Amino acid sequence: MTQPRALDLHEIRSRIASFLEGRDIVSCARVSLDWNASFSPSLYNSVVLSRNIPSMEAIERNKRLIRYLKISRRAHISIFAKPDVLFSVMASPALTTLEMHLTWMRDSGARAVAHALKSNSILTTLISRTNSIREAGARALAEALETNSSLTTLKLDLDKIGSNGGQALAKALTINSTLSTLSLWCAGIGNEGAEAMAKALKTNSTLTSLTLVGSDIRDHGAKALAEALKNNSALADLDLSSNHIKEPGAYALVELLTIRSALSTLKLKHNRIGDDGTRSLAEALNTNSTLVNLNLSNNSTGCNGARALAEALKTNSTLNSLDLHCNSIECNGAIALAEALRTNSTLKTLHLHLNPIRDKGSLSLAEVFKTNYTLTTLNLHNNPIGDVGMQALNETRKALSTRSSVPLLF
Image 1: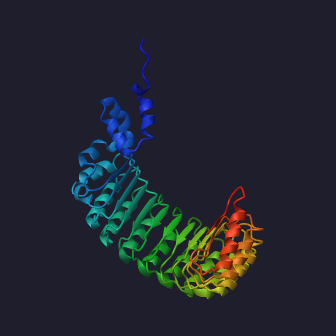
Image 2 (image 1 turned 135 degrees about the horizontal axis):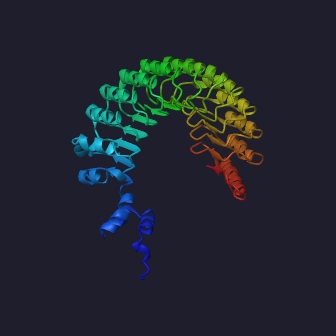
Image 3 (image 1 turned 60 degrees about the vertical axis):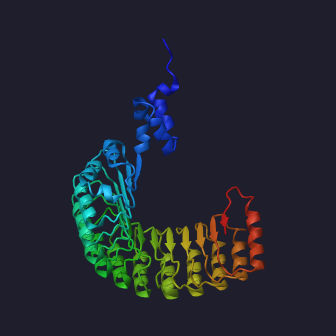
């Protein structure tokens, strides 16, 4: 009896396919029908549809193999012109992620996806970026969310769904019990949209991550969300960056952080919190025991805010990442932070790039690593550090190279 060769075995060919690039997989799949059956699953496991490549016929024929489908620029000419193919692919028992980027699908395309979602029970991730989806498309997707029970991640980034679109999605959150991540980056939901989200969060118990970057929610929206989250035990990640939030909004978030809160990540970059708002947030860190990541970059925070944060770091035992880049922290603020880091044993990452820190501040920060073995990343890039400071940092880098786990100092 003839012993089979290794490449005659489907299992071996399938294993080889997992190590090959797309072009090589295509070549192997064309060898024979048997080889096609072995190599096609790897070829169609993850598909990027752009400029009509691959063809709609190939998509339809291999839909059972597609787990990840990305529809990118100009592909809408084929995919949204044939919504029956889209429905068919979304009905496939394999597809778990659908991503659409710069397709100009508009509201009509969003309605097609929403219609397919109503009967889909497999898709877990739906990502849309810059697809000209407006209020009508958001409403259609929100309606689908009310009955869909598989989707866990929805991102509608850079699609101007407006206040009404935000309110529609918020209403869906009061019914839907599976969505855990919602991103509305630059969606323009405004105060009214934020208020609707806040109302939904009072009863929703599944959403763990909410991104409202650049949504123009301002202090009023921040206050509404902070109040709602006082009784929410699910949301852990909140990103309110670029929302024109000033001290009043920061004070509301301070109240949230001082009570029992589920928040572990709070991003407030590119707002207008200033020293007063930063000092209040620092006071909250004295008692808060859940926050792990805090981003206060680009908030006009100066030395007073930095000193307040430094005092908080002397007692806080949970924060491991603090981002203060692009602020107005000078040497005195840097020295205060360095002093705190000599005793703090939990902070792992500190970003101070794009601040006016000079030699004196950099010398103090370089000294930190002599006693601190917890800090793994210190970013001082683009500070006006002179020759003396740079020499101290270079010497510190050299000394750190002997450690078993070398910290990143740049």
